[in-house]
Length: 91
Image (cartoon, rainbow, N blue to C red; front, side):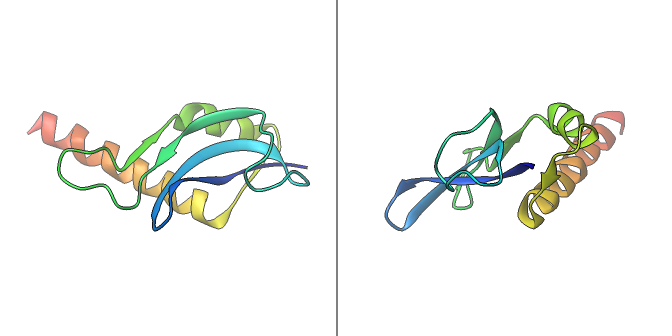
């Protein structure tokens, strides 16, 4: 089964996550099929907190990939942020 989940990187007490498409049986930080973006939970100032290719994720989901609960939440956050920037540009 193919899943979309987070892999952990970064230093001790400074997490950084990549959003990847991988086989469910592979290790958390092991092999992956495709990297879709990243999530930096401790971003400050001008640092980007979330960079994510949602269109590519939707393609994988349409093919049967299962996103983790956290990835579902990140997709929702990314869509809300995109909607806010679009409405700000219109106003």
